[in-house]
Image 1 (tube, rainbow, N blue to C red):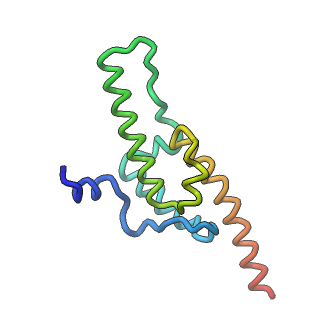
Image 2 (spheres, rainbow, N blue to C red):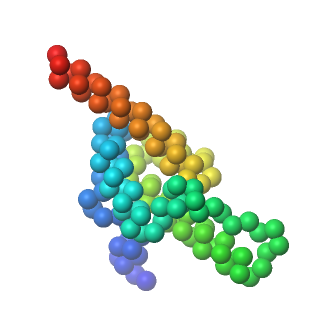
Length: 126
């Protein structure tokens, strides 16, 4: 697969914005990002429903399943890192799974979005 084709199949559409550090575009980012990731079939890595296979007694089938999961996890992580600011990426780099990273980002920016809306309302009322 050429790199141009790989970029088309593993990237997100251009209408998915990069998340602003301030969180002021969280709502539209969340909508477009989650829809784009779902279209790629990788949302289960974000919501935590696709857990890493365990290899208690490794077989060839289990090894193949683990390889596939790790590849999908890497694609999911790439999708996420391509649309968040570097400062946010640095905050989540230590987290072992995309699901844990997404949970942290979702909490932080849902809170920021609420604060941003309150601030906008206050500015409007002044």
